[in-house]
Length: 245
Image (tube, rainbow, N blue to C red):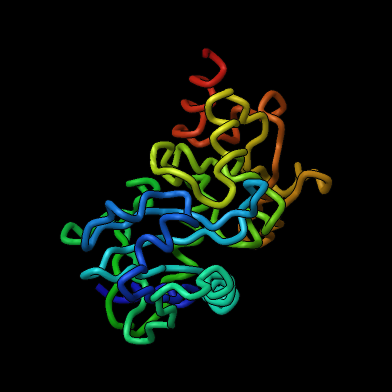
């Protein structure tokens, strides 16, 4: 395979004897049960439950690797350092690894959010850049990520479709933003959703990001106002199930 490196991603390594308990109290997914080589999509939220940073966790022989947006890697490391206090935890960039993607790679793990996203793995960087191809493929499936698309400190975690994309555990205990996130889930109150609509139909008041190169506008819309034709099948099914409850 060639051109598999996602050059717009970076890897942070969280190590030390308290690394897992430290992250367990911060993130939306269960870190204590993460196995070596397993990937989980998660986020660091505001106390109000809004997305600050989303990323993918990987278990690595006791350490945790964070597959994150390269443009936000330093800010994420700084935010984690603020929470660290005196815990025995080391937070550092791992320049020896890069994030890789391919639509079909039978010997590699699937993206933890949605199998149709393709294979995703960590390895030393290779020549070429698959970032644009992955971005187009991801958005064609209605999956959003990163500060620009999610709206940093603007969008509640469940409004990003995080539950449907396996981005939250409800039985792991407390974490930052847990109260509002759990309340929305148990009261079935996800009233707005991030969706992609044709750019010519964009509503600037609801827009999170305009993507002229793909002819798309990412918007936070009320569920009852969403055009069903704009929804990917996985999200349409989830919204229909919510409405039936």
